[in-house]
Structure formats: C-alpha cells, structure tokens
Image 1: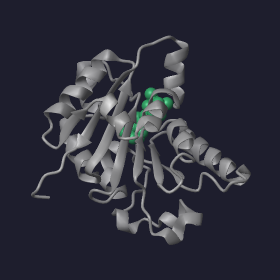
Image 2: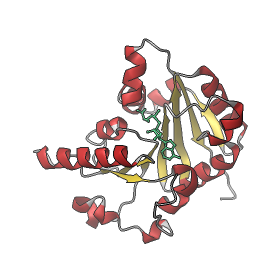
Image 3: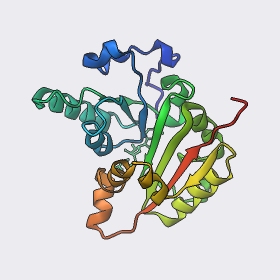
Length: 220
Ligand code: SAM
C-alpha cells in the first residue's frame, strides 16, 4: 500500500537540487524515467554514458528504493571522475503519481523493464501498461520520445504491445531503426543491465522487447 507516501503537488514543487546537487545550477529536469526501477541497474549503467542527462528511477518498495539511494550515494562518493551526479531515485507509486513528478513533454525516454506480470485476468488492471495510464505516459513524454518495454513473459509482451499500438499517440518502432538513430547503448542496457534481466539470462529465458515513439501531433 502507498497510503504513507507523500507526493509533490506538481513537478514545479520539486526541488531537484536535493536529487542532483552538483548539477543544480543547470536548471535541468529529469529526461529519463525508469518505472519500477528495482535495484537500479539500468540508470546506474546509463548515468556515465549520458552524463548530461538527468535520470530518475521510481520504485514502490521502501527497502529497495532505500538500497538504490544508498548505492547512488556510494557511487558518487567513490567516483573519482565525478560521475553519477545525474542519477537519482524516488520511492513512489508510478501508477498513480507520474504527472506529479514529470512536467508535460519533459521526458525523452520512459522505461518499463521486466514489470510485474500480474498473470490472472482479474489482476490485469494492476498492470503498469493499461489504457488509462497510456494517456499519462503520452503526456509526460515529448514528441519523438521513446517508451522501452521488455519482459520475459510472452503474454505480458503481447498485452503491452497491443495496448501501446492501439493508442493513437504511440507508434511501434523497431529495434533496427532505434539502433540506426544511435540508441544502441540504451537498447543494450535495456536487455542486460537490470537485475531482473540478468536473472532471466541465468535462467536462459527469452526476452521480448517492444519500443514505441511518442508521435508528433500538430494540435499539441
Ligand atoms: N525494472 C527492474 C529490473 O528489470 O530489474 C525491476 C523489475 S521487478 C520484476 C518490478 C519492480 O516494479 C519491482 O521492484 C516493484 O516493486 C516495482 N513496482 C511495481 N509496481 C510499481 C509501481 N506502481 N510504482 C513503482 N514501482 C513499482
């Protein structure tokens, strides 16, 4: 349950300098969001690759989000090159409060990596990709921004893909196209950098990737 969580009233109410103290004067806001980031493997891998991009993980479990916060603090403290200043985490229910954290069209990448499958149909409404939530994801992503999804559960892959494809503000974009656009390092990280992704590899499971572009519409 998330009843004890406190949320910012709006993105403007967030003091990002507490998350990114060294970069506070840049006036930047997060551009990459990892929803259900777990132990933080993706953003911790990407942070030194895109040092000028602010990144935020969202994780609902208290101990896990605390672990990631400690992990980032330790990395900052030991990095001689001043790395990891651009990555942070909040404990949050991303299914309820994403627009409280991210302003309209502020994100260039939104990650859903190995989300909880919620197999039973009566639990499908608990899935992180659902028709209602897609409107919020489209709202926080800028036109041209990318939604990355990956899972080892074929049924969940089909579900995410069919819902995202049916939503008018998203279009499917294949892996080769994204690699040609220079997003190879991001895709490699999506496949291999997270704790869940590594577990799937150890178990020799299959991974299903599906990516979508937030389309440009002239009226917005
Ligand atoms: N993305 C990570 C990875 O690939 O290693 C973690 C995958 S794990 C299977 C799913 C994570 O999503 C869990 O850590 C869970 O606590 C988190 N989660 C589930 N629902 C969430 C929500 N509504 N908001 C934020 N995090 C959530």
